[in-house]
Length: 362
Ligand SMILES: C[C@H](N)C(=O)N[C@@H](CCC(=O)O)C(=O)O
Ligand SMILES: [Mg+2]
Figure 1 (spheres, rainbow, N blue to C red):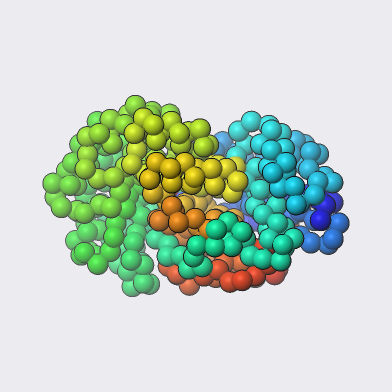
Figure 2 (figure 1 turned 180 degrees about the horizontal axis):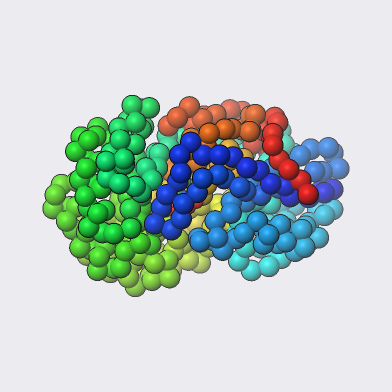
């Protein structure tokens, strides 16, 4: 099965309500979709999220990276030589993790098709059911409490609450939410780099003293500030999770050996796809560090790939794979089956996409 062509299109999906974090505000997902066709007529799909404030990748840079740098080195390659394909993707240019992820996903989709099996089984076959949390965007405390109650009514057992705007209001946000949902919901929080190290320690200790029972705090400080992250980890009881501080396996090594965080949030858009995410899983297993598998604002194309990795790896014990549930539409027929918090993987070939609507190719 040899690669005949690689195309990049665009997809637009409106959200149910604006997605707000300390870093950005999103109304519509506008992402790049990769389509790889082989000489056997098989087709594989992948997705690259436009998240310039985190990865630096834009629609223009993603298309250019794929068409001008990655595509030429892959045309004619045999899918069974996946090792060499992944080396070529990684070596085609530095950084650009989202376009690399999109191509990597499409290759894995084809790899499953080549061996007539579903991808999560090739990756370890550990589970075919996953329970995701749901994100509560950062807004006024009352609106966030209402969103948390809605999540509870829709069956979510874990909410991921966005904070990091102003630590005093963040404390009020969590107090209001905990009061509204009681102890029926597990609460994790994500500051998306919004606090200084000292603010983070201060506000987290206050949350601990008030008994708000926070499962973990994600990326309290700036991505580059590993010393600041370690300062927070050393000075609070709540587990600290590195997100924007960990893109590559090398970043993960650095966090682990310096004990700068207790947990890592792996995202395909940061690692450059499944093949590097597996390396982080292996490292995490060696050092007995549980991982979360997270996502950017992606459609069910990117999320199906992520779900297959989650299905394969036991070291991934926490799941923030909610983006399709935040979308007002699902253009994907097939792939992972989303029923609010429950995600099911069926025994399809590859990722099991039957039809994907609304992709616009140049
Ligand atoms: C969508 C997911 N729940 C999430 O919060 N992901 C990111 C932010 C994604 C984005 O800005 O597109 C995270 O920081 O964990
Ligand atoms: Mg995060």
